Length: 363
Image (cartoon, rainbow, N blue to C red):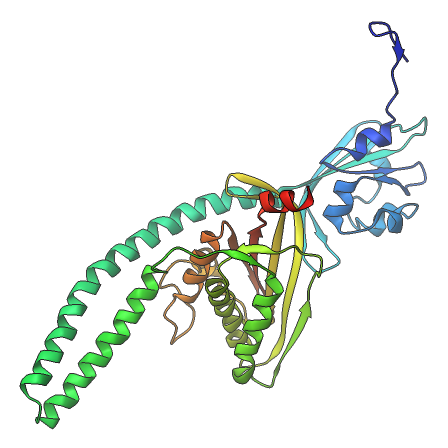
């Protein structure tokens, strides 16, 4: 090809080069229904190396997608909500569009895949977070109102103790009042959240898990085992170490309590995910920290509201552990998302990296 305006040849770009640069997951099948091309977006979506799948039949990675791919002929077929189970046992739903496509002079089929869960998740999280914020604001307002009379009750109890120093019977009841007021004050403080802004520094996220696992080791039942599945290449994350320990500790304790009766495997996993949207911002890379248990699961009626204050499925729970954890992670620009079914409950912590700092380090 020749560019007449500049008097110089223009380099042609091949079809594979064009498809490789797309953010849409693309797989091309040859006339024998074998995978002849897979772009980076598809490899990342399916968590598979392109070298591993090139030349194999498409049903190897997309079983039961379509009984007969020839049905699409020279037209196009779209399949919605197709479920893919990834190598790490996570399930995702995608929309697949299959169309007749010629590549480098050879007939074949092009499969385009869109992760529909990401769109659904963004919409659901936005709606859920607005509900959560409204509920959290109401709880904090009530907590402030409760704190004032509690202080008055505690002060009155101390004055009565001074007025009747030798009255053992009265002292016993006044001690109960003081203890209960202190307990309620601590509960209200937890509802109000941290009193000061998080002091963030760069930390390795695996240090958080190591510290938490040391804390829970003495109280971990013998019928629960722990599996560590870390990605050692994850960069440091800007965080307040103490508050993040509290968030992870709350989630790990919940997982252990969920398995305390029948036992099971507690899996702690870390991964990096690319092009991930949190709220209205899309990050090139984020850290995904997963806490997975094999307990009975979260009751269906509570899944949508599990992060709201005072919501709990435990008889003796306060319903603040998950709310506090969510507040802490949100203060770090992240989000906690829960997925649950009997025998498999996963809490994913999504944390963005400090991309400005990493860019400066690389420059």
